[in-house]
Amino acid sequence: MDRALFLRLLASMLGGTIVTLAALSAVYRFTDVANPPSIVRAASALQLVEGEGQKTAEALEVTKSSPGRPVVVQAAVRPFQAERFLRFRWSVQGLSPQQELRLIWATSASGARPIVRRVTEREAGAAAVDLSAEARWAGEITAIGLVVLGPLHQPLVFSRFLLEPKPPTLSDIRSEIAADWTSKEGWTGHSINFEYSGRPNRGIPPVSQVALWLAISAALYLAMARPWRAPQGLAPYLVMILIGWGILDLHGMSALWGRLQETTVLYAGKDASERAAAGPDARFYPFLQAVRERISPSAARLFILSAEPDAYLAAKSRFHLFPVNSYATVAIDRSTGVGPGDYLLILGAPNHAEYDRQRERLILGDLRLAADLELMAPGLGSLFHIKAEG
Image 1 (tube, rainbow, N blue to C red):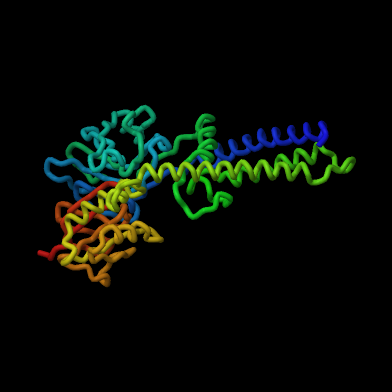
Image 2 (tube, rainbow, N blue to C red):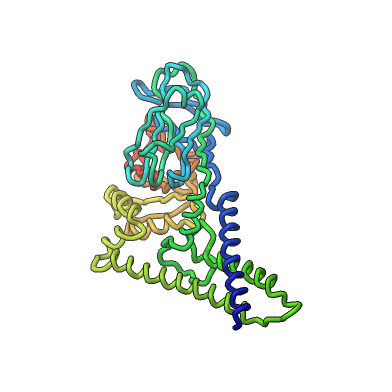
């Protein structure tokens, strides 16, 4: 390879790197890859935790508060990272100047104990809270809601909660691109050469980035080489392919080595129970152990309700709760056969499930069951013991 050809090859690869980084930055800045859509929780996803009222298709209407108790409304949300959503908005009609608002949320670290933040008069007037300066707004958020303090002179009409994403800065974009190459996915069945070998459901996979770099670098080399005057053959393009392939291979080998080290640290010398508590189920397993303690495996039937289309958590729950007599389902109605003495485990926060603490009634669409709330863990699920009416 002569010196001129080598310099053209080097220049084309360097130019391809610059153009690829610019293209990735534009994608991260102006698409939902790094800038997730707002989390909108309409009335159907709002749950009345304290107070009395009714829900329609358009709103949740609170007509009465319990004596000496505030009105508490919580949104059913999937866990999300706090730093990606820094503004919370709400749409509530019927608030009076005598009432005060509190924003409450729970994180994976706080567990069932909520974190409370006072809403100032200015924030209440704007119906929005900026959480960028709130130190406690951090980690994985598992639940969020509003508390209304003060007398209820007229119905409160809750229409929706809204969490707005933080626009990515240049520093955020650099971190996102770096995370595509440094994040730890854990053990999967994916090949290191497959497109999905990057972060699950986030980012641009390394294979796609290398493919983009190869295409741009090859186009730049083609433009500089002027093949219509002096054909250069395929050697420069094969060099680019080998470099890209080598980068992906080194990245894959590094990821595999990291997984081996992490597996050794997590599981070496531990029994089955300790391994379950140390692995990916570190949060979920203690919750299921608490469920097991409240159920008699020989006498009770356990119905597991999950809205997940693949029923992954439901299947995992049945595995960890064996030999409890359990059934997984995506819906509970009269044909399901749930009756007094049975237990119902609701995973996550299905939009159609509500619990009236005052009347001790579990509301599942058109079905209402007398039930005691045995256990609740925000972001994980709730366990109910069905009892006889009366």
